Length: 188
Image 1 (cartoon, one colour):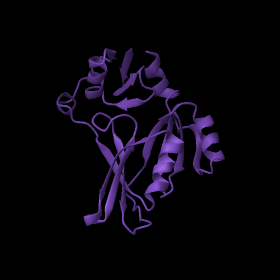
Image 2: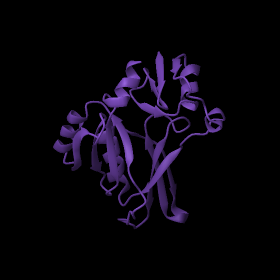
Image 3: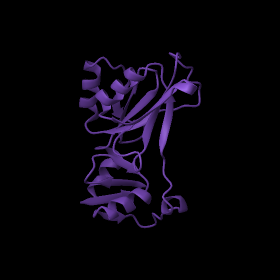
Image 4: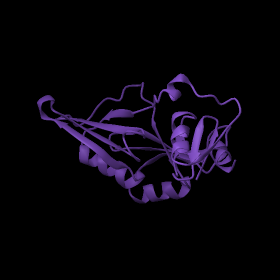
């Protein structure tokens, strides 16, 4: 197995995902028998050395089953944990790729009886790395998912992206990890 670290991104052959952090996750690759090539000057931060990492991003949803089905069907995520707290009238579902103890998750929070939320202007988007963004968007479109930004290169760049909205209106950026800097990092 092999992992490449470039521009703060670790690409592990054992996983099709791009994972952020040149420290904690690179160490995981090393511990799993993966060779890590670290770019010169790419030093680990204190947070990376002590195991700090992004745990999850929480979004409130109006229909838990609809949201679980959306992320599972269209992005291949799996429910990792479900916590129902009837006394407080909410349910949390952690969904993502891999294990909650090592991989970032999306926390879907359903508050009993609430069917929609105002997103405000502070939330940006969730990013999901994909391969062949054009085929992915065609498949999503065929499933009735609205593509709100058609796939193509970012302005003044070479990475190809697209945007879709989940059933609750949260924006999801699709990043083609076979293009631009992501592709270059994987070829080193």
